[in-house]
Image (cartoon, rainbow, N blue to C red):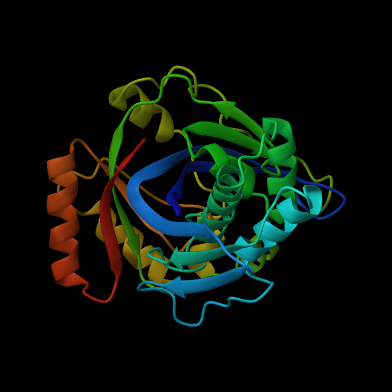
Length: 290
């Protein structure tokens, strides 16, 4: 058996820079991944391919062909029919579903990595990235799960060569948010004038001070429509921003997960414990972004 960790993906900044004629929105995003907040996928060879789901957020999660983990297996099996053997997989679902931190995409990426390892495949990075993009716009960036700048519809990825280590508190009010609904609410027409990207500080943000100063000039363009559709997100952002030691608060992806950045691990852990005492119904996790 082998195990793959599907780390939570955090969009530190997310600018919507346009919309293509085919309806896909163009993004420019600074992304980091949680060191210890994520799902876990176990894989082993078997006579037949199967998927089981366990963990605190497994209830109601489909295990049929529409699950991204099984879609990842099918995509690799179609590409390498003679090399990819059946496998039994168990997904321990520790991240909230539809939460803006790439849970399903991270799971699909973990499946791709795990199936490649399990079968001893030699797959060129561009080929794997192409397969990943067919599964979803966030899947390619989750393959490597490292700090980067993500552009286009998710297919243009530039490494953040000297990223700082950031300590964060992740908070989700356990309200599902429709990504399609959020983008629809933006009201962008194909070919409409593009918003600005995140240029200006990406490569220079090599320490915590510089990164926070730069991120303060950025935004998440999906945050206003998400707060309009699910007002509780505004409550989360307010609660996080008021935590002692919080230096930046923002929503990740299309929500509803929000994050706060803190100066060190101790401050983040204390803030998470403080908020958990106030909001016992929310999902809250202190983690390091790497």
